[in-house]
Image (cartoon, rainbow, N blue to C red; front, side, top):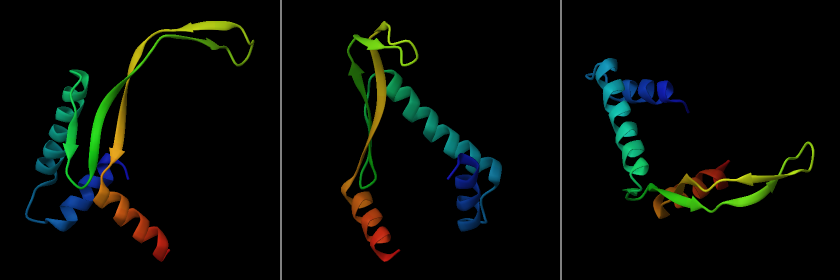
Length: 97
């Protein structure tokens, strides 16, 4: 599902809301998640999951084309861990399919 599809789903479920307002709400939520992660924070949505940042240490990698050693710098990578409710719901939906 894309962001625009999410906005349309919410609009269909709540016809009293304007699409531009829904777009603003969804964009604000995503912006706040991004802002928190950029500051090294954690965002937890109970029952859905948690977004957090992990540190990947510097290492020596390989160029897949040439096989030459390449230094890969330290970086921070966003991760998402699913919540218990989301795992249960996903597994029950997959069992029915």
